[in-house]
Image (cartoon, rainbow, N blue to C red; front, side, top):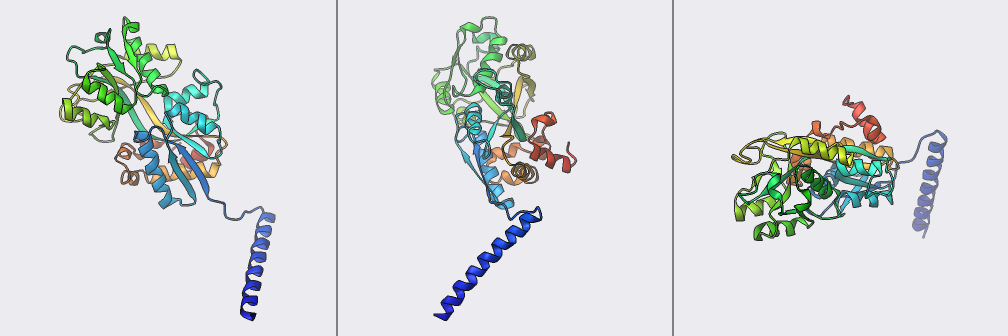
Length: 338
């Protein structure tokens, strides 16, 4: 009985001592060890580049910052991810593309308010937005008159951006039949001829080969290499002015995807994929995520091949300081990167 009595007494004294220590620390302006940060990454469509990279990041965080607990959850595109993150901004972040983020910050349709507090933690990938077809008669965007073009899932803002740029390059944009569908359906539609062309995201690499979205492998296995359709710089600029979004021109170099694929440099445009958070996210959490992302990006590739499209120089934001989360900005400044 004395043994149990003494053990209980010691446990009680330990609890009292811990509480006393906490009070003392607070009195000195210090704090007790922080609770683990539970972060939910709105990661886009399951299996997509954003989802795969988000998953890889959560695994690397487990190793290098176990106090920052994060998990990737599926959302139907960047736009939906932004809406969901805005409902719990202190713990939800967005893996998304720059163009929809800029639209959200500006409060343009489909957003009903300006999300000016949405800021970048770090870039994760550079995605070149291309247009492909297996039809030998479709060589330019002008050849898409009366044709059907697959744009990806409808709720994604990126599909709208693609349509806007393609229409800006066409002399008869209303004749083009744009169809929204998920990647699997778009693959099937290309294979059975239900659509004549489709968008294709290509993730750049520090060194070739560059990597298209996963359905590309199934397409070439069945039909061989498609041909790539130039998206003229003039069309990108025209759509940029009309949409009030700074679309960036970017070419896919000849042979960057495979042997003689594409056969020549392809004019197109790019979108940067990154991690975004609202100001309400704890500054230290944003700092930790930026640090782990920058210092361990190569390790992410061991969890997903999609993460091979990330390298340290790409991660560092090129946007103005006021578009970077304060916690992440502190990390980049400490490293002498800003």
